[in-house]
Image (cartoon, rainbow, N blue to C red; front, side, top):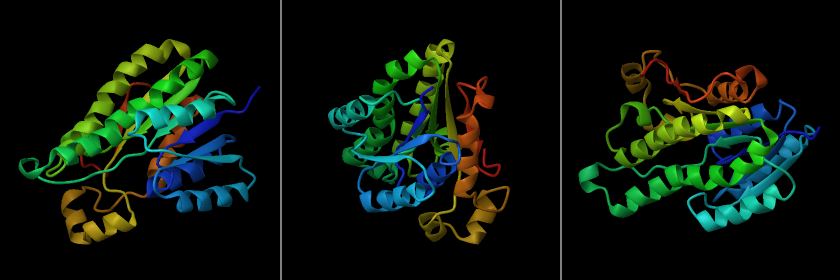
Length: 241
């Protein structure tokens, strides 16, 4: 029986790194995606290869449909992807009254259209194996909204709705489709944006989450033990919603 292959998009980011490292413990071959941060992704790949993990890299803009389809076509030549982690995305915040059309489109293209661009080409090969896991990393903003993030919240909420619909379409093929909606997760960026005082006011748990918190849930949802969990939006947010 061939080994399961897992694709992690946005593997260069803090959460993407944690997910890749955790999946590397699950006896899967990994394909790590990057767009602008190739060097960081190569460093991670080298680290995992040093532990004996089969790791490949792929680089493209998930918001660019033709480029995404071309790159995924090359990957599929050597077999299906059965575990897909949709983690790539970006944000470009502004109050909606001052948000440009470019800001709106960039975020929707990278997040919501990126979900379609990556997921759709992988579905038929995945369905032919009658087993698969599609896990999208979204945001608490897509559940409760957030000031200055109308574009980001709309894109993430769109992934929630699309995932629920897709879950119904592929459940009979042994494929589950779920979303993880993190709140404030520790990174260099969030530590600059949020003071301990503000975290205490915003988060009932009074602390940031850790990237590993998200990665642990990804690993469980990707496992055989999670075969009856599908169409769900699972928050990791310390009680924010």
